[in-house]
Length: 258
Image (cartoon, rainbow, N blue to C red):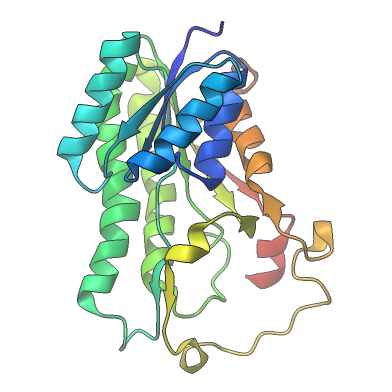
């Protein structure tokens, strides 16, 4: 048994679920959080069936009171918190800037950026007790790739997450809390299901690529499991001297499409 306790937001599917399973397999006790009770219970039950320890937590990262309640349940069960995977997020609405409505922009920022802030703010007092690790899920969009015209709100939120990670890495270093950010490219997940695309042909600039948009894999996207492997490394002792760093996991996609 590892003995550590982790909170994984957006744990109901994709990268979050894969990371929760991977951490549990190495003995970490995992609280998996999602807005969907049925979805998150399935993930937690699957982990338990494989011999791991998992607690299903229902909460909305854009509503801090639900986060506080969920973290309270996790602490009541396990008594500590060592790892925070701030993974929950949405693609939101992608549209030309004059067609991107105020409430659409605000919703993406509220979930992706405010939600990341709220997650870390709620968890840090508990991490300070013994040190720990925070990993934020950002994206290649807004950080090293800017060709997805119309993704203004999403890209802005993802760029801000990187800045937040760097700022907090320095602020929290004296408490032995490491903060790093992962920036996935095209990954097979369910996030596209919450993307609303509106008239993107009006915003896009023509971009020519060599054959295959992901050079390392002949155009094939990465997997949630590959990102989970990176998450596992970033919260392990093998990365004990790494903090304030963003790691791109995209098969060189963003180098091609910047």
